[in-house]
Structure formats: C-alpha cells, structure tokens
Image (cartoon, rainbow, N blue to C red; front, side):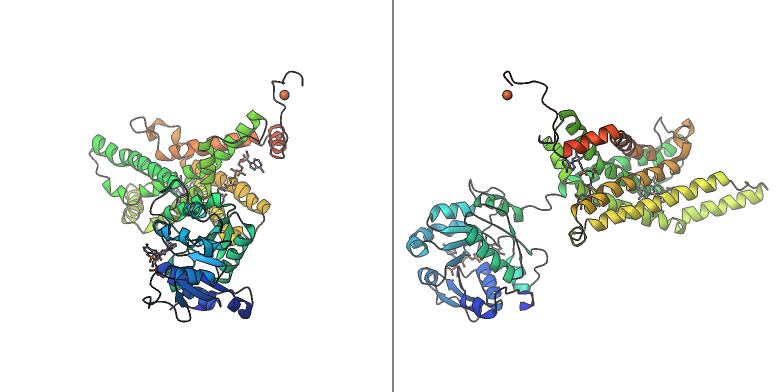
Length: 463
Ligand SMILES: Cc1cc2nc3c(=O)[nH]c(=O)nc-3n(C[C@H](O)[C@H](O)[C@H](O)COP(=O)(O)OP(=O)(O)OC[C@H]3O[C@@H](n4cnc5c(N)ncnc54)[C@H](O)[C@@H]3O)c2cc1C
Ligand SMILES: NC(=O)C1=CN([C@@H]2O[C@H](COP(=O)(O)OP(=O)(O)OC[C@H]3O[C@@H](n4cnc5c(N)ncnc54)[C@H](OP(=O)(O)O)[C@@H]3O)[C@@H](O)[C@H]2O)C=CC1
Ligand code: HEM
Ligand SMILES: [Fe+3]
C-alpha cells in the first residue's frame, strides 16, 4: 500500500481539493496516477469506454464516459496508448482549449516519425499538449518506490499549461524538469527506453583494456615461464594478474578522463576561439568523463583491496618463509637497504595518497555533494584535484616500477613489464598539461575561454 507521506501538496488541501483532474483510461497507469493524485488531495474523475465495469479504481474517484469526464476538468491526463488515440478527435469540441497531458511511451526508440505528444497535438490542434510523467512507472507510483524515477521531464509549447502540470508533479513529490518546447518530446519519450546511455562507452572501453592487459599479463607471467623453463605459474591468474590488470586499467582510464580536456584546449588554441563546436567524438568523450572516472575508481578500489590482503596469500607467505630459510641455510644475510626501504614505502604512500584523492573525486560526483558546491568549487576538485590524483597515481607506478624498464632482464620476448603499459597515456597527458600551463599558453587559453577571438586570417574584401 503506498503511503501518501511523499505528497507535497503545494496548495493547501482545500484549494487542491477544488482542483479536479481528469484521467482518460482506467489501465495500470491511469489507476496508479489516480490513486496518487487522490492521496495528494486532488479530486479525480476517470474517463472510460466502460464506466460501469471498472471495479479496480481507487476509492473516491468517479468514472464516466470520456466526454462527460472531459467536461469536469481543464487538465486531462491521457492514460491511453498512442495506438488508441483514434477516438480523441471525436472529442475535439469538449476538449477545446484544455490542457492534455501526454504520458505515453513507445516500445522502441524513434518508433514513429514524430513524438506521441506532437502526434496528439496534431490530432487536437485546439488543445494545449504537455508531455510529462512518462518516465514514472505505474508500479513506482503505486508502491511509493519513487526514488529511481522521481525526475519528471516536462515539455510543451504553452508556458502556463506546462507550469500547471509541473505544479501537479511537485505536489506528487516528484521533481519536474522543464525541457522546453514540445520539440523535446521525442527525446523525453526515448529516455525511458535507453539503458544507462552514458555508461555504455566507458564500460566498453574498460572491458577492452581489461581483456588486452589480461592477455598481455597471461603471456608475460604464465606462457613465457611455461615455454621457456616449463615452470607452471598458472596460479598467478587468480590474484597476481588481476592485481596488475585492475591498477593498470584504472590508471589508463584515469588518464583518458583528462586527455579530452587537453585535446579541447589544443583545438581552442589552434582555432583561436571557443565559439566553434568540438568534433562529435570529442563531445561524446567529454560527456562520458564522469562515468569513465567512476569506472576507473571502481578498479582502483579493487586494486586497493587485492593489495591489502596480499600478505594472506599462501604463495606470498611461502615465498617470504622460504627466503628466510635460504638465508639461514646459506648463512648469508642481505644487509638492510635504505634505498629499497625508501622506494617501497614511497610507492605505497603515493598509492594511498592517490587513492585518497581518487575517492574524493568520486564523492564530489555524488549529486547530493555536487549540488552543494558551486561550479568553481566543483571544477577545482574535478580538474585541479583530478590532475593531482593523476600525478600521484602515475608517480606511485613509476616508483613501483623503478628502473626495471631500463634493464633487458625484465623484458620477456622483448615485451616490457606490464606496468610500463600503464604509464604511456598518463605520462603523455601530464607532459601535455605541463606544456599547456606554461603562462603564455595558459593565459591564451583563459582569454579564449573568456570569449576572446583571434581575428580570422582571411579578411573579407572591403572590411
Ligand atoms: C572518480 C571521478 C569522478 C568524476 N566525476 C565527475 C562528475 O561528476 N562530473 C564531471 O563532469 N566529471 C567528472 N569526472 C571527470 C573529470 O574529473 C572532470 O570532467 C574534470 O572537470 C575534467 O577536467 P579537465 O581540466 O580535464 O577539463 P575541463 O575543466 O572540463 O575543461 C576541458 C576543456 O574544455 C574547455 N573549457 C573548459 N571550461 C571552459 C569554459 N568555461 N569555456 C570554454 N571552454 C572551456 C577547455 O578547452 C578545457 O580544456 C570524474 C572523474 C573521476 C576520476
Ligand atoms: N504502465 C506504466 O508503468 C506506464 C505507462 N505509461 C503510458 O501510459 C499509457 C497507458 O499505459 P497503461 O495504463 O500501462 O496501459 P493499459 O493498457 O493498462 O491501459 C490503457 C487504457 O487505455 C484505455 N483505452 C482507450 N481506448 C482503448 C483502446 N482502443 N484499446 C485499449 N485501451 C484503450 C483503456 O481504458 P478504458 O478501458 O477505461 O477505456 C485502457 O485501460 C500508455 O501511453 C503508456 O505508454 C507511461 C509511464 C509508465
Ligand atoms: C590504497 C592505495 C594503494 C596501495 C596500498 C597500492 C599498493 C600497490 C602495491 C603494493 C603494488 C605492487 C603490486 C605487486 O607487487 O604486484 C602496486 C602496484 C600498482 N599500483 Fe597501486 N596501490 C594503491 C593505489 C593505487 C592507485 C589509486 C592506482 C592508480 C590507478 C595504482 C596503480 C598501480 C599500478 C599501475 C601498479 C603496477 C601494477 C603492476 O604492474 O603490477 N595503485 N600498488
Ligand atoms: Fe566580411
């Protein structure tokens, strides 16, 4: 039973009571919305093909023919599928001048040449059509689990009609977002049909790098010893190789979050203006940086967990005990090396610091946090601290790898150790960023971003 606790009747109960809303269609959505409206203080009248047979309707709602119901309210919510709009033009007279709320969805993206709302406006030109509520599911309305779909995208050509519908959404405890004119209806109708649209590209990129790096490590850590010394190191597949793949992919993705910003700055410098669109691929890349960053953070978390439980592993314990016993047996001890102590503590410390800022980036991308800061603060964290995270994690890997990538002994079949792969893009991004923050270039970019434009080289004749 849904509770009416998350109703926010903006008007006092009396005036809301005075407001009668009409719902066409006594199906799932019509009934759920009707129930919610009643709980939030509206009076509801249903239009139905069979007014007497609809027994599932919420108590307190009246049911009558479509025409009679339409006369009862100035706002009519069309809880009918687009395919069944055919009867509506027959009600043109009684619907004239009224606000029709189109809540319909389609089964697939761009199913029709025009949006359902525009189709409805075409059927009834004398009415004011507003698109709304299509992103809210009947079940969520009934069960009160509105968290996921609290946002209601609204659009329409008549501002007053749109505002009235947004008020209804607010009093239902929903969050109306004005998307502009009825032209936006198509996008609003496509929205519920997409599955994590912004996460697809980042997940594909992450999956591709994960497979590539995994195969690389498999060749380097398992196939190479197996074919050269017949040694079976397949047990490394379970922990050691994942603890190479996760950090390496995380570092590469982190660099790919900041690379588009560099490319964008170079394009703006080259064009001498910010008033020209970035290429589409760069726009797409810039738009999914948040998701790319969060996927990278997830991998960094896995790396931190794998690393923290390293000492529990049989293989690690066997190795350290065996190393000790060998020293005793051969009666030679390896003197404490200050250099190694410095090296290993530094790279772990850099990893921990890098991870700290990484998590901070993740926290600021939570809507509740990002809504609490202004855009300068947000950009400071995301851009400045973001680069600090990249510097720390790159340094962590560089210090961990040390000078191993210089010596051939660490190469196998001419392949460098896997950590070298993770350093290519981050180092390139940091070097380019370092060049771009050189004062003469940085000032130029800042001026371009503030609207300065380099006069075009070709001057039109007569100017
Ligand atoms: C864990 C994690 C979470 C993240 N969460 C988010 C998130 O919630 N939201 C998000 O957006 N990103 C997020 N990111 C991605 C990244 O932190 C941000 O996109 C960050 O702003 C990128 O900074 P930048 O310096 O590369 O580029 P930006 O500061 O975005 O600038 C990119 C380019 O755009 C142009 N530009 C910038 N500002 C202007 C301007 N005012 N006028 C004209 N041109 C301009 C310039 O050419 C600039 O180089 C996240 C990353 C990680 C790792
Ligand atoms: N279900 C959901 O979660 C959501 C649905 N929507 C949209 O709401 C609208 C209604 O969806 P839903 O309630 O699930 O659909 P239902 O099929 O459950 O109900 C549709 C209603 O339309 C009326 N209707 C009028 N003419 C016809 C006709 N020729 N054939 C069939 N029904 C007709 C019927 O009411 P009667 O018999 O009383 O005339 C019927 O109950 C759709 O446009 C849908 O896209 C939007 C968001 C979520
Ligand atoms: C809690 C934080 C962290 C700790 C304690 C930590 C610790 C370690 C350790 C011990 C290793 C060596 C692993 C091995 O010998 O197999 C390592 C490797 C590595 N770490 Fe971290 N790290 C942390 C965070 C990070 C972060 C945030 C990144 C960047 C995304 C990162 C990237 C790497 C990379 C690329 C390697 C090399 C992997 C390889 O080639 O074996 N680490 N880290
Ligand atoms: Fe000119």
